[in-house]
Amino acid sequence: MTPGGWLRLKNELYRLVHKERPELTQLINWAASNGDRSENGDYIYGKKRLREIDRRIRFLQKRLENAEVVDPELREATDQVFFSATVSYLREDGREETVAIVGLDETDVRRNYISWTSPVARALTRAREGDVVMLRTPQGVEELEILSVRYVALQTGLEPEPQ
Image (tube, rainbow, N blue to C red; front, side, top):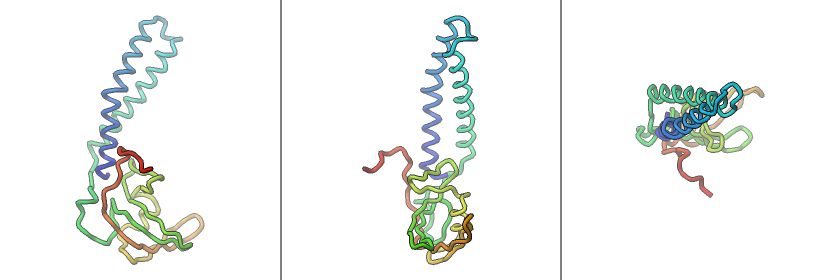
């Protein structure tokens, strides 16, 4: 994953462990002290939400522990498409599109961040500027002409959106 994606997951883990989970356990303890737990909505919902948070915490810990962080700014200069590349390409209908190839946890349609496992990313990977690649879609095969390949820092999602 990219450094921004790693930071976003790390911040989510911190928020869950140090803010949401302690607040929720406090609510559950309060609800349990009210007596009958079988019909206590706060208690039942709290326990369910606690299980969801604990599941997400375990997932994030494993994901961060096994993550390989690839910083696009530290890559050696190349015109070949690999993970973390920002690629501009021309579609057959004349539309120019720009996408960044990122990890599974970082995909973001609004920013045009696509997963490295997506069909477009797979078609673009290992190609070079000026190459024409074939993209197989449900409508048939489409040619994509690669206009530019850059390795630049990507937005993390933590900074304010441009107005």
